[in-house]
Amino acid sequence: MPLPIAVLGAGPAGLGAAWKLARRKPFEVTVLERNAAAGGNAGSFAFGGMNVDYGSHRLHPSCEPEILADIKEMLGEDLLERPRHGRIRLRGRWVHFPLKPLDLFANLPLGFSSGVIADSLMRLGPKAEAATFADVLQQGLGRTICRDFYFPYARKIWGVSPDELDREQARRRVAAGSLLKLVRKVLGTVPGMRTKTGRTFFYPRGGYGDISTAFGDAAARAGADLKFGATVGGIEIREGRATAVHYQDASGTHSLPSHQILSTIPISHLVRAITPEAPAEITRRACALKSRAMILIYLALETDQFTEFDAHYFPGADVPITRLSEPKHYGLARLPGVTVLCAELPCSTEDAVWRASDRELAGIVKQSLETSGLPAGHRLVDVASRKLPQAYPIYTRDYSGHFDMIDQWLKGIEGLVTFGRQGLFAHDNTHHTLGMAYALNECLDDSGTLNRTRWAEYRRAFQNHVVED
Ligand SMILES: Cc1cc2nc3c(=O)[nH]c(=O)nc-3n(C[C@H](O)[C@H](O)[C@H](O)COP(=O)(O)OP(=O)(O)OC[C@H]3O[C@@H](n4cnc5c(N)ncnc54)[C@H](O)[C@@H]3O)c2cc1C
Image 1: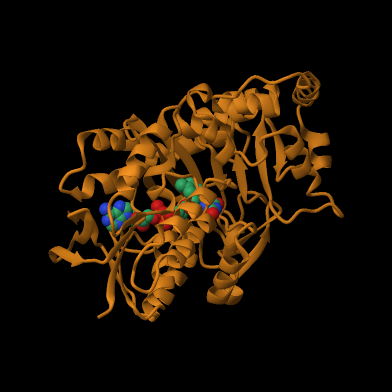
Image 2 (image 1 turned 60 degrees about the vertical axis):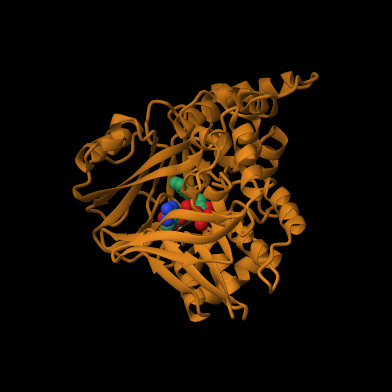
């Protein structure tokens, strides 16, 4: 008898695991996904005559070779390798991103560069223990970079002050956390000193979601049953073991008996889905884990090309959006006369803007373009928006206490594993979450038993993931 495995969520993590496991004889894999399509936050959809993503998405070259080789095999020539070509708006001036020495020399505001030099000289003394995001970055990068870049950016992205954020947020989220690392990154763009990461990225010609679709198609070919429009509402526990998943689709409520339940849905939702109910203390802590929401605003404009840059980054508080990308540059879409912009607006689901109309949202983007001196006069052909209630985990200073206790409690349930970006409340990139899926496959033996020691080692290794933008 094949062993039934339920995978919750059809983002990259869920589909990566489904593909790996469906190819193994003992397993019968079912994927339950509430959306109508694969990809989760890393999916794509059609707008303005092309496929667009949920914000700027790139597959980073730091992707593990085994995973990259699988993606290359699945997508073939449709996986493009593209140069990065963005800009950061710093004190009203544009600086190339990735940073380049000559461009920095020509375009960095004078007050900024002199401030960074002064900061680097002042940093020679002993350092106090860093407890917060603000401490880590201030000690590593100095006052000027924090004041003009990281601190206002952090306030916009996470909606809290940098000194209310845990230091872990800096370690996991800021790749260049010291001036030395920053200098190395800059020098990495100089011919002859080039480093592998940061200069190029991979992107599927038909949109980022094609990575997930390819894993989903391969999983289905290997025998997995992919159920879309299937919302998980309950996980049944009997005598300390997860035995079945309850889900709802257009035809009603169903129960799926499972030997292992591999969940990539948000960990706080997972806790609330468990029956009998989790202890009140665990539920309370699940509610205390907060995520930042994001509105993605798409504008179709009547022009061949908005600018030559694939993305613009806005750390400053004068512009509410954090990033503006032009997806046409990513997948080399041929679309004469029209281009699409995607603006990323972090917010809380409690904010009034969460309920704003598409027209009002388009107005916010137009205002941002005007403030930053970008072309704002193109005719608007169409506008759309998408809302991600859980875009980024917020690592407040008490988050790890909450997360660790929930994690510990979930570990006590046999036959249930949480992983993926939302499942582990991590900022991780797509390739990290695919790495989790591959690791989980390795940790399940043919009798469907989880090698807990090995999985714990992997979990420790996942903590070293550093996110790339
Ligand atoms: C704005 C933005 C930009 C990003 N840019 C990049 C980038 O450039 N490069 C990069 O590598 N990564 C990027 N990421 C991260 C990337 O999106 C994630 O790494 C990836 O989506 C994580 O995959 P996952 O499968 O772990 O989770 P998700 O993609 O979140 O998938 C979870 C799935 O579970 C489903 N689900 C949730 N609840 C239920 C339920 N009750 N029942 C059934 N299904 C459910 C969801 O619908 C979803 O499909 C970015 C993220 C954001 C928000």
